[in-house]
Length: 376
Image (cartoon, rainbow, N blue to C red):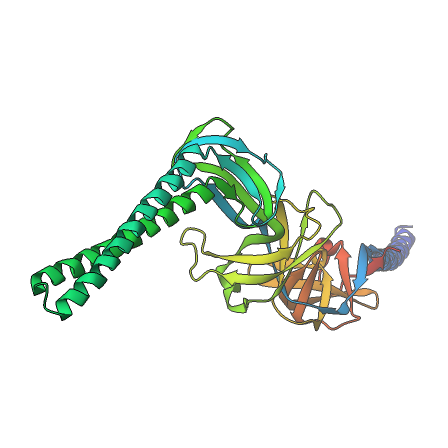
């Protein structure tokens, strides 16, 4: 009994050990399956995790553009003359007002001429008196000369008449000069415009007593204008006279005006480190007015072919300028060297060729090799 029981017990232990071994193998296989499933799932997640970045792109262009410098400036009269009186007197009349057009030589004001006309008459009388005295001295000189040759008068007497004749001639010359001066003053009672233009300012009215040097009116010439503007120190080396200038003014939106550089000032402003430039602008129809604010483009050279991209495509990292190029469906980072700005576009001097596709929107989210989804 006891022997059989021991035999059964041993066999049961073997069965139980077999069951345990089978269970262990089953658990091991189950774990392998689970880890394999988890690994596959992670791999699937890894594959599906890469997402495309939405971007917009633009194809780099090769354009023929002229290098230029941008500035702001002001339109000024080509010439301005302040007309003043050269005489003292009462202003009898003034023929112009602010804004009146005038021609060269036109009478613009008159001073009461009574005193100056009387001065002419007085000078005329003095001249006639001096001429009569001279004629008398000449006759006496002829008589004394004849008597002196016959030794009927002394040398002293002859020298006296010679001296009187010289004085009489001097008196006539002084009287003639006095008459010319009186006539000149009389003509100056009528004040003429020294040039053609328009009256900018009038400072007097009829009836005012004016003195020599009193400011009457200012005349400006506006069929030509001067465009004054400044350029920075770094652009001074590219400046030349006769360079083309274009500009716009708010008074005429969408319209472009042109001129040419005529004056380059010899020295820079110390505070701003800029150089003053003046361009001459034709204004035959006189629609442009002095004082208008202008946005200026100064062309510093002939047109040249250059690669350009929108300014929005550029990224700045300290001193490095870069952009992203779309190669197939991947983003590629490019370092570039930029040149001049042309409105909304930037010149690319180095690092990019024409017809390459650059990212213009969404590049802040990009890295090298990122998958792209180009928005249409």
